Amino acid sequence: MADTFKILGIVGSLREGSFNRTLLEAAKGLAPEGMTIEITDISGIPLYNEDVRTSGFPDPVTEFGRQIAEADGVLIATPEYNYSVPGVLKNAIDWASRLPDQPFGGKPVAIMGAAAGRLGTARAQYHLRQVFVFLDALVMNRPEVMVGGAFEAFNDDGSIKDDTTAGFVREQLETFATWIERVSD
Ligand SMILES: Cc1cc2nc3c(=O)[nH]c(=O)nc-3n(C[C@H](O)[C@H](O)[C@H](O)COP(=O)(O)O)c2cc1C
Image (cartoon, rainbow, N blue to C red; front, side, top):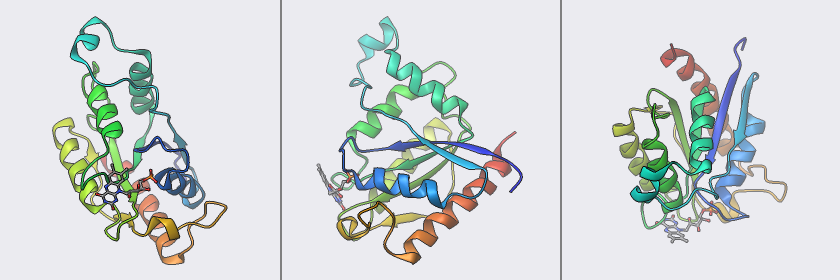
């Protein structure tokens, strides 16, 4: 692959031992040549408050928006909380959605997720796709990556145990590179 792709990784969990962070870290090693994934930290983003917004965007929000804007694509690893998107992730997206030059507009996005349950965040992922409709992000449809049984899915070094699952991640990232080329100006 001749092109380079700078991908911003977003983890929808603040937990230190997050399976979704582990999944995103593992994705770094499965990315095609020329694709780099840098994981951002959304833990400093405050809870959305319209009064705060009208008096000025908090620095972590401005920085988050800059990171999205500068990336060629955004890769989100989301947990599933009560069949939906975790609040911390939705909160970060809500803040970004209010920034001037809303950074998700026209941005290529890919979604993956790991959950304890068998459906591997399927329900959360489809809710996340819905959120991105209004933001006009260019979410790639397929391949989907839904890692179920997360407690058993990773080796101690963070690599993915199952070759088939690792293959899905590799395929998603390869297709994401093609998707970015297709939809970018
Ligand atoms: C508030 C809460 C709600 C959850 N709801 C779901 C759920 O709807 N489906 C599911 O598969 N797992 C659910 N789980 C379990 C998560 O899959 C599990 O905690 C997972 O490790 C979270 O991702 P993380 O490791 O990246 O933090 C829930 C966990 C929490 C804390």
